[in-house]
Amino acid sequence: MAGLDLYRAKRDFSRTGEPEGAPQSQSGKAKARKAHGGAFVVHKHAARRLHYDLRLEHDGVLWSWAVTRGPSLDPDEKRLAVHVEDHPLEYGSFEGTIPEGQYGAGSVIVWDEGRWVPEGDPAFGLEKGHLSFMLEGHKLAGQWHLVRLKPRRGEKRDNWLLIKVDDAAARQDEDILETAPHSVASGLSIEDIAAGKAAEAAAGATAYQRLWGLTLTGAYLAKGGLVDAGDGQQPGRIALCRFAAENLISETAALKDRIINGADALAAARMLLAS
Ligand code: MN
Image 1 (tube, rainbow, N blue to C red):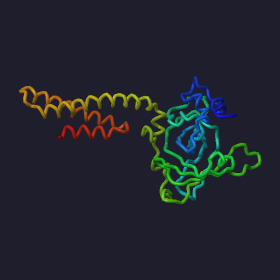
Image 2 (spheres, helix red, strand yellow; image 1 turned 90 degrees about the vertical axis):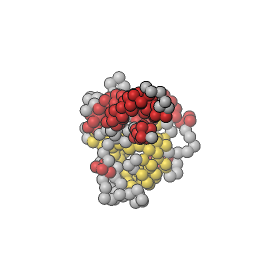
Image 3 (tube, rainbow, N blue to C red; image 1 turned 120 degrees about the vertical axis):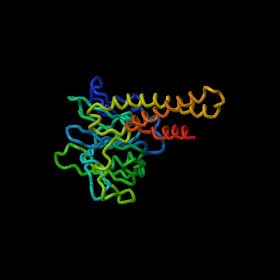
Image 4 (cartoon, rainbow, N blue to C red; image 1 turned 135 degrees about the vertical axis):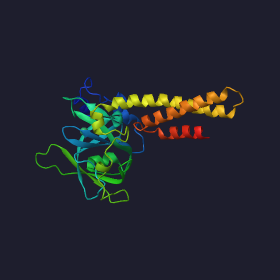
């Protein structure tokens, strides 16, 4: 089957929250850029058996391998990577729970993401059975190899090995799966997702943004008030704004712990109030 046909054939999109993939994903070849490589994602997938799915963007789809024991930064640890069907580009940001009874039922998080840069022509490498590439992710970096294994008699799976090259990004004394288990997109664990925290986190993000807006307004008002405090009524208003902003800051900070990217905004509000 070509493109995403196999991916779509395995899934019932009226039952799973996974993306169907826009039609243009398939015609991505039409606008394939000259530069090879693109996004890479590693999904942590608690299906019947926990595994990690390595996905590399190529020609409008995500090439995919199920890495049964997960990637290792140790060059001596060669990890089995079963080549599976191409996934749509939209799948890259997928986090959620695939319902019981559906293909791949279980929870999924974005364990790592970034850019991949192949050495040479990746389409030729895939066909030949050897891809050599650089990863620039949060957890995985440096040079890697994917090498196809000779099929054993009766072997139906397309088995490859994922191997870390011994370079500055290699680690022999650290199991990255243990030291960095959470999502790089939401900060959530796979258990959080299974417990339905994704929706809660999204609601938290909205609440955080609203509170943040109020915090900044309060901080600006307090700061502005301090500048032109000529009016006799101003000090009271300033105190009120300052009180409101300070309270909002602590509330926003509490929410921020569950949401990423809030740190800079909070620091800005604190600086405004302190100045
Ligand atoms: Mn999977």
